[in-house]
Picture (tube, rainbow, N blue to C red):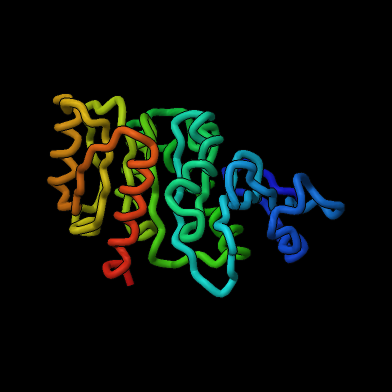
Length: 250
């Protein structure tokens, strides 16, 4: 069955075992049965799988189905960021993680802090898609992180605050538009939970400082760092993720 988006925002997909034979990057489009096979990634030894329109799963090199992989949920702020997800994951690690990237159009168009309905719709789409992915690729149940880039940082943080049981932590990369925010969450449920904040090495704006203060006030275990080049950002993310292994939620 070909994948698609339902009227309620849910994904309809049938990733049968038929698609598994493409692991290794043999196909580039729907096969004779209408399933979406896995594709080779030109930039690295990673493999791409498109389980539904607007969504891409980036699979690690030497994928083994007996190991539960940590999941990085990438919420891009623009189409270019979405397209760059395979290269980004390859820089972080080609073997350690699975990434799920959603096109911005699937996440809703309203501002993250004020568009509750749009925010919820994007979250519903993610959960529907996760069920499809988790039925094919082994995903670790307690090592799932939501990642927000640029303007997408707000959405990633709000997803985490609204449903902290879905994620082990949140990663913010090169945040922009750090306007005053009204955080909505159950503060007790996010106490001590990890958040990595990676910004450009510049003087922080007053609005960025206010956002960090607001997040710290919730009791999050906030680690704020600066990084300017893509390899440095990728290395910081990988090191931070590896440091979370002993404290993964159980």
